Every structure is written in structure tokens, then in C-alpha cells.
Length: 270
Image (cartoon, rainbow, N blue to C red; front, side, top):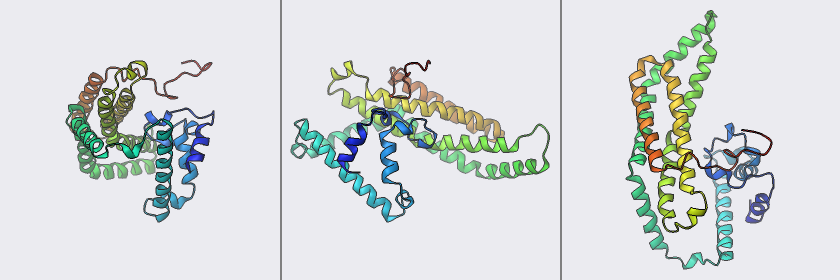
């Protein structure tokens, strides 16, 4: 999609401006895909199955085209704003970005989020034999057709909870890093952010949502795998501490209104 098509698509009144900035990227479970510019662009550009396969040359060719179109649009918007991107001190900008990233990486909450990634991998790897045993157990129950037993429902719940854990495993860290780095950027123009909601709060809220959903998922998994209860409790404690830390670092995050997701449309109630 070239920049002209991107601009035209962005004018569609059905779309919610900026909704994609504060989502969890789980399009398959999102009720707003029909109102999201990112989703619309993705569906158009990657309609061919080959362009959805990262091991296929067509995928990377399409990504290259998207990159070029985005860069062209960026330069056009910069010119309209009177900014010459070619005149910017790129070396200084790179150093500043690296400095802010390093500062964000050293924050307690980002380190805890990064540690959580390892905890998830360790638990799932160690629980793999139990997962297989559980699968055999549920298949046996299904064949026996035991009363007051729903093996298919239990299997479905385990699968869904594991998917939730996996989906947010890395995203919590990524969103927190964006929030922490964004907070540093906002210090450069504090007056602006007195008038508008802070992007850092929006990113922190997405991280908190990921933490909340992960805690709920681990709570369910705990009941299915009593043999690993102590390890699950350790993860739950870790996530709860992380949640409290993020809320302390970004006290306004919970009240941030994400476009579409947190807004109440007229006539639809709460």
C-alpha cells in the first residue's frame, strides 16, 4: 500500500483513529478489527497466503514495500511540518535513543518483566511431560464417558490459558519498555502532556492488561496442575509485585482512555 492509499484509508469515517497504538495485537480476538487501519492495511497487503509466511520471499518483499511507503509518508509529513529529517543530527539521536533504552532496561519493573519471560519458559519446559500426561488422562476420560466430567472442556481451558500466557509473555516487557522510554521523551515537552493524555500511560496500561490477564490464566492453570502449584504460586507472586510496581511508576495508567477500547459510544451504556 503506497502512501496515497494509506492516506485515503485513514480518512475512512468507520475507523477509530489511533486504536492500534494501545492494543495487544491479538487481532483474532479483537472486536474492533473492522475499525482498525492497521488491520485493514494488513489484510490488503497480506491477502495472498504466501505473503503471510515469514519463510517465503513474497512476505519479505511485501514488508520491504510497506517500509518504503511508510518512510516516504514520514518524509512528506515532516516536510509539511517544516522539519528536514536529513538535517537532523543522526549520531546524536542514536546515542540519545540508546541512553534512554539503557535507562529503561535498568528500571526495576522492566527487569522484573524480563525475568518473567524466563520464568514462563522454565515452567512450560518443565511442565511439558505433565502436559502430555494430562492429554492422555483427558483422552481416557473422554473415551470412558464418565459422569460429571468434561474432559473436552478442561482440555480447551488448558489450551486457552496457555495461549494467553504465551501471548503476553514477551509483550508485557515490550510495552513497559515503550512506556519507560516514552516517559523520558515526554520530559522534553512537559507542557504538551499537561494538555493531552500521556502515551507512556497508554503503553503502561496495555502492559497492565497483559499482567492482569496473565495472572487470571495462571490462576486457572494452577488448578489443572497441582503438581506444579508451588512454581505457579511463585509466578503469581512475581506478577502481582510487577503489577503493583507498574501502578506505582505510572499512577495514571489505569485511568488512561484507549481509543475505542475504553470509550463508551453514545446510546450503548456502560
